[in-house]
Length: 634
Image (cartoon, rainbow, N blue to C red; front, side, top):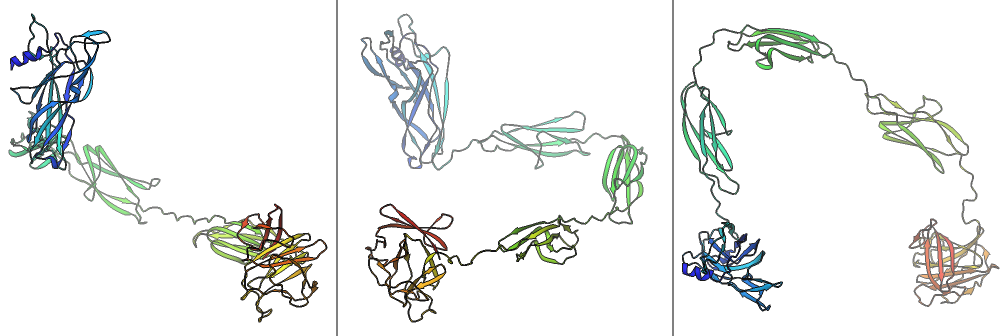
């Protein structure tokens, strides 16, 4: 082996420096499927300085056997030779003959230059290397995991009288040890067992007590005769000598609990003190009533430690005096309490009991004041046809309306009440107030009286909104009229969706279910002299053949389909009417000859709707960009 080492060191540069370096293996797992097989383990390196040689020893856990090793990718060094040519060198790896788990490597001497500076040999530079060498190990089928210990030691060499010496540790003597944990996938590593703790017993040397403790690693628990006690524990001597069994356990984090340490110890009897014969003087018990605090102050005074009892229960104690306050009772005639007290001076016997009977008066009970219900809130709102009063409050709420406070209630409710006064032909003034009562025991809360005007109804014009102007009236499918306002010089178009069967009020003509329409001018109904039919005229318009006459007759549209009706009123009052089936795609002309691009419906607030409903503004847009708007009341 020595000859081999001389040969190895002959490859090294004289005077090479030591490096702060170590090799290590990261924690890893062995899969269950790999048990019984050979696995590959990469060994990594870290250098703080340049290094040219090192020695490493491995220690493997039970069940893992080293099969061999080979150089890793990071053992190949890139450098420039003395001619300045880039080249590479792979450092040799040697296995010790004496120790099969020891490996030595050294970079062969090979002069190179770097930045025009010549160096004696190639070295690994400072830094981290992911793969210096690869280990091949086999794991037994029953491998349970464990630790791999990696110990590295940098090596040095120097020239001595022209002879290369053996590879020896650096003068710094640096040795680095790294541990990697190997676990089995799906299994567990056999935990270490914590060392058994040590039990210690010390006498306080005064014959009073023992100090018992246990020392060990991690959490140490102490037991005496099977009962856990504090660690350390003060064990008092007793009258007779006896034995105790002391046990202790310890457990470090991540390790199994230790074996139990056991010690049988003989405790000596405590020292016998001479008997005490002198007795403490009996204390004195006094009492004083305190009406302000509604208590009776009971005080026992004497020598030494005083204890005050009631019914054998300790109620107060103190040095020289003890005081107990007894609150006044519920019984208005009062109660009697039998109290006792003892005193004891240091070194003397406890005194005889002092006895006393204490009278405790009953409480002075003051009946609670009744609850004052808050006054309710009374508001009113004037509507178009009435004035509505609303009162809100706690419990039962009642509204009163009259010119006199003694008026009968007009409305009652729980939490709220409302009452409505209709508006008449003349203004009326009334007084209004409200009361609230949370429950029968509570006081009534009363609001302030309000003098309120019930205004007369406003006088309005004609009730019929169609009394003036010109209207087209269509009978809908429910027999109800739909009014379309007409304006001279403008057209009106209405798309009807009324099926003919049951399409109008059957009381008008039960035998004829066809759709009808007529005109209403300044409140007067106009139609045909007879119920003329208006046939489907396609996209053509015609002037009404029959003049408008006052009467009850209607124009009839005898069609079995949905339809579109258009009306144009000229400035001279003449009318043009177009009627066509809505299903025909060719119907796109109004009587004024314009092509309809679209129809939209809006309510009186300007919001768009899907169809006419109530008072509706119908906006028709034509292809020439013009629009018309008519008001429809449905």
